[in-house]
Length: 379
Image (cartoon, rainbow, N blue to C red; front, top):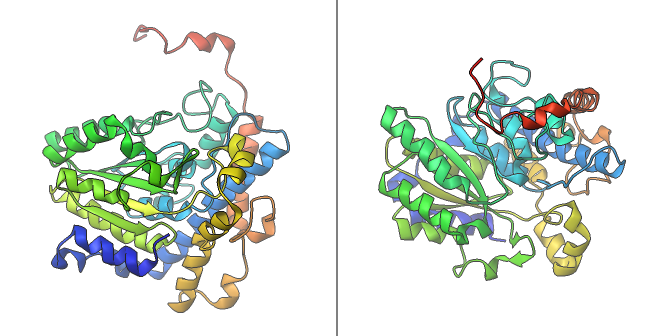
């Protein structure tokens, strides 16, 4: 994994010296913003931990796609967005559905993001889920919340997101669209078609590439012929930025630079966030992943936990005392090793309420299986 210094050095190749000076949007964050970012990192991690434990207890069916060790990408890309911006998450981005516009207040019913309870209802396949139990995990979205419905075919939503961005441009809106994909998705045809269309029409589309080094069981060197996936941006004459995916503020800075550029009508960008997938592709792949990835690679890839990286920054910046930083310590440990004492009480309470809501919610009536299949009367 690239060091932070090499990430910054390579990044400046994509932008002019003048533009690169505006990359430190973090300097505009208030102390309360920094502490909220930390809370959101804790929440994203605990969502993952809680669901893994629920699955082990036999209270949850289906496949889990862990975001463990990649939380800085989700929090860093979403924290600075406006409520009217749109996102297109993928299967490893479940916290994104409730992190969107969470800056407006965790319990604010008017915010443009899903509640944690709605997302849990989706995972448990209950009536209260956004698609009323027609699928589980990440195949959800919301036109009202500005979330494009996700599919299993990564990169397939990029042309859709480009269409949403095109509508913004035609309507004279300065809203932006963020899409999320793994590095393997950049080898697909719809990635090229969507980015090419966005580049030609200078659409406000930012494509976040979560380069966690593995596309299922395929290593990155067999997915992309260049060292950096962001180099693909050169073919479209758009910026290709590289962010340290373990550093939430580096992700935030690069994202906000691309977002403000898009708002000014200057078109799309690609941001490659270098990270590492903590577990298998899904929990069905965990044992196999221990064989196609050796222990040394896993240890090295997980050595810089995004929570510990950010807490170290907060302590050095005197935004958090060392005692406060040590009060909750879920970082650098597997999901089954941590306990509720390792997380802030408000994070535990938020998930507890959401899980209880999902478990107690009813299943939809069987007759609903025919709903939304054929055209229905407006009545």
